[in-house]
Length: 260
Ligand code: NI
Image (cartoon, rainbow, N blue to C red; front, side):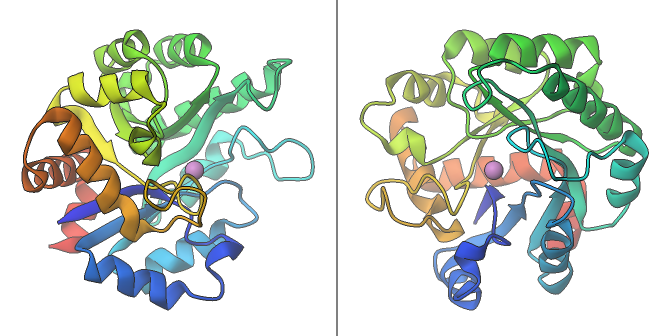
């Protein structure tokens, strides 16, 4: 059993063949997936996926890449949307200084709003942090985000950042990047991080793992991510799959209830 802890099945990339993508999940032993919201305009589609399919879950949030032309949610709005039983997380949220090199203040303000909503809703955070590790960690600490907990999704930082994230109680989720030859420092983190604190994801439709690199990703391919992490840790695939799935359910008890 495996769970894809981060995917975007509501994206137009899946409009033509969602039933096939869901069938491929079943065939590959992927028993659940968290469909991560990136803005409020598209959130109804994410929520509908979770309502229609027992093994799909949703999160609600506004991704740091969006700026103009989208609804900027306040804390109350996020908390209200997160009250739905299949909405298990707040996000994706965080900081992205890769696409926003000027490091805008609105990203940090929006991140704080999401953290406060997660604390109020008692739901974990799905965190996107790109070239912004120091500010991400600082704001999480300042806001007391450990009480909400959550995931550093698509973890792509080095061991020092991993240690800091683990220290404040967060989980690290590995994507197809661990299968890329060049991703040495991420592979090191995947090998060293405590088994009880790691997850696997696809971030589909993006970041397809080897041997599908460059193609459209899909939740079924999380198996390749898990196989790569198991190899890096020198442990049987089944044990890695079981542990990451258990970690997902520990973080999201609502998902365990829905799937049992
Ligand atoms: Ni994402």
